[in-house]
Image (cartoon, rainbow, N blue to C red; front, side):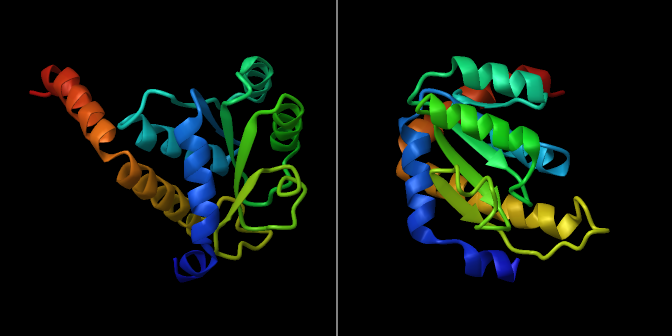
Length: 174
């Protein structure tokens, strides 16, 4: 946690939030354990906006990127920044003018060279710790920082959406 807090660059967080605010659609993606973080990101943001979606299948990620509007955003979670499927989506997004945000440990990774905004997370993960809990928590901290800033800047709309969702879900609880 401490590593991630030191690595979070407030300027890059603001850049990422500005992209998220302007986008009509945000696709959150990843592979393996990073996809779990992409799903969590989409879930968290879906409580305040309907434009966030997680897409887990690599073919569907490419299909979605091929049809997204140019002012949309792809958020890739990739601890290594070097997964083939993530790189393919970023390359396609870049060629179509779609903005990209990368959450990674490695700022000099292949994916970082394609991303518009790189958000670093801490926690060194060894070769036998693939998908470790500390690495996931590091990514989750970045998600929370993004969410808190997005919420702070869009508080009225976020609270209105939360109330709408709470009302819609109220009948689903005993």
